[in-house]
Length: 139
Image (tube, one colour):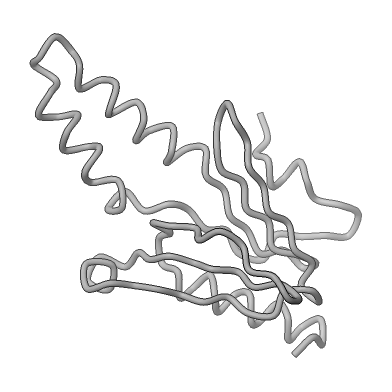
């Protein structure tokens, strides 16, 4: 089964960089799941939620656009052409700086999209975005 990003590629488009959600950003669900596991397996629900969030979030910078997909049953996608994306803002708190995760906010021409929280290595994603824009000549 191919990923959403791979299935969304168009002719002559290639993936330059992929991102993922950080397990550190899901620590609260994992901890709650482990603590509640002996309580009639109630912790399995929280562990399942963490697993689904981790596996169902896809981010990619391609040669033509930025693609973000979140959700398993209810899917939410953002796809912005590189020449329409103005910037990616990275927000990292103290814990995010220490554990290398943060929030990405993608700004398109005149609009900004909902923050993408808990992204692993957000600075690498921003760097890949800038480099992809430079290759296309959209600085």
